[in-house]
Length: 196
Image 1 (spheres, rainbow, N blue to C red):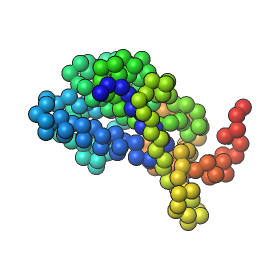
Image 2 (image 1 turned 90 degrees about the vertical axis):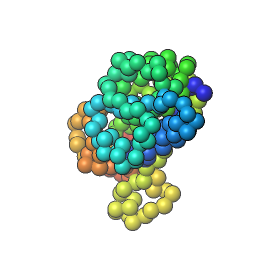
Image 3 (image 1 turned 135 degrees about the vertical axis):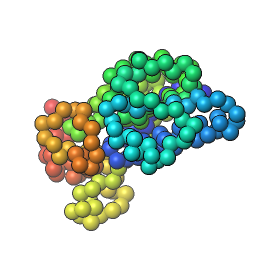
């Protein structure tokens, strides 16, 4: 079935894991059914963390993986299921996915915003045409570290950056970012959530 599904959320919320699991399931079903391999995973060329994640999450050998910086450079004619990880990094994602979704199933995993709670990239422009959207949540580290609280209230959709004055696109993990809830975000960056 063609269309686009979106998985959004903050860093460390399991977006990539869910994308990989979905692609694995689809590719393995096709393989078991005797169909030729038609599942593609697209990773951004600048994000080298994904090689480690790909191995840790054990992407199926039935999923073809490629790296690029622009989706419009790809020929996806032979694929019917396409997964895109870190969708916020692809500047042409809105235009290209709107074309692909007419004949292919496209699954996009993307950040829901940047560390300043602003939109990041073009994925949000796909929301009006998507078949489904799932928002994942991370666990607030300050609640665990400072407050010793680990419960449903510690779920979060924000992230803080440890590097001040940095560009919007800075690839990193726990060394550069920390998932935080709205309470901790406002505590650490007072006044930044109010509209200007």
